[in-house]
Length: 254
Image (cartoon, rainbow, N blue to C red; front, side, top):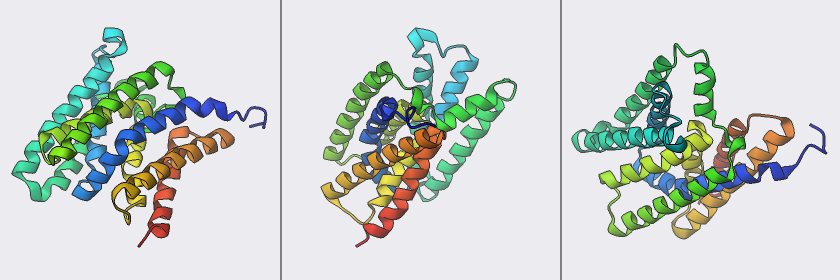
């Protein structure tokens, strides 16, 4: 890529999308890490993606002004939240294993549903790696509004010390549904876990400040690398976030 074509302004909207994802995923990721249910984000994100696939097969993805896929993803994610809540109450000792099984079930079901689609492989890749470079202002505005609602709900849950109820899983499902079509399943997981892991040695407000900083640096450096080397943006950001998480474990240790 020539220096003339290297215009960082092209990354303004994708970077803004990343910051909006981090706004909700950083606090939720820290909570998930504390609870020891690391793969809940992957499972719920994959179930939300399965909802998107089902909406496409039923030709509902363009319904209601394009909200059909989003509503299908949200409904699927909330169903997963209800299922995980019931599993936690009935089998808390194997909750992580059940979350893993839900993930592989949703992934396998998505492959089966798209097995007869000639563009199924491309569709699965888009859901996995996302299309962050193609976000538009309308998507950003809707995401900002919904993210504000998620943050308000999270603040209320923390004040009530009600993080173990269905409300937590439902809030998590809504946050993942918002982001999975924006950045893909891989970036949803990385945005939740990498900042939390990088700041594992910190506590309180300081941890949140560093976690948001790590996330923003990961998105910024990954997007710049993708533009400079003509690489897939989502994968570049994931690698950047994971490398920063590894560095944070070393540099921010006690």
